[in-house]
Image (cartoon, rainbow, N blue to C red; front, side, top):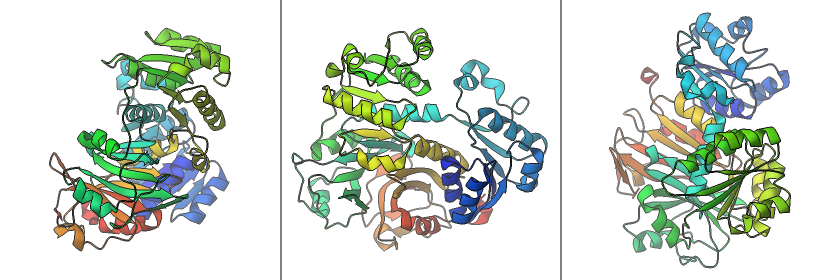
Length: 458
């Protein structure tokens, strides 16, 4: 498949890495020649320096015979014009655009993105993706990381173990025997800043951070086994009243169970907009770093604080201050993955990485049935890959124990029809199954080989 990716920032680079790793013909376009050079030096891609919306630049990028264009520059308008030019001049069959401004996404303008108007096949909204990720974190407050898979039937949980965990010093193989009906499996362990895929004989220790793949119906039981309980969230404080904060507050307002929400927003105009838009949410105009404002929002009686301003360091500091004021759970929006190791020492319970959620969303629409979703863990240290098994895959027709998975790869779950199955050694993978694989970064190319399909499939 020939793909043009417009925008060589973190999102564009990650998409290019994934697609080029699957031997797609990828060309990266960006007005910043240094970013283009970084992509061509580190990835198996071609690069064109120039403005993505210019027809001559797209011509040089090979738009005349491209199968897809992904417009992920920093400008909504450039992304829209790029898709228009790709359609009108080059007849590119599939066009994906990342759009941030909520005005473009309003339901009343639903026919804006159509062949007769703006020919964009898939619109990705980072703010909406991040808001959905925030709601997932709030729904599983005992986990520091969560992500849904298999159409919501399975969930990845990041759980920090403490001395109260009842299954410490127990081999994982023994855990499987003790809880034979539990549809959950430990797929990753972070110990002393090192992430690895465990062996059946590995044990769990206090201060480990583990990643568990669980059937959605078994999430609460899984958390209890590892010493956690999911407390109902009734009072939530959101710091940051931009698009993400608004989307989360609006979603919480529409839930059947009554949740009391308060928003703190520094910019007065933004705060007024939030107050006009929301119905039951209390909006406070002030600085989330100000302890007086936090106390006015009753942070000491809140069940959780969600900090989603546009500055990583502010988000982390506000989260720390809220925790010190008595809030039991803090979730921070963090763009810079190098800051993630500070979460533990700062006692921040969970984080959301907008770039990772955006990349995952775009890739979900790029794949043609083979890889349906990708979720990046940590600083791109590992990935959870959800993929459909096709007849040409080396996985098809073989029991899990007979498949030559690399050392850093574990099967988290298998979806067969509507049923999520726990992966045992004797479970035979069949054509049409959907598998969720945890893979360390170095083993991702081998996983992609195991999932390979013939070119006729596309």
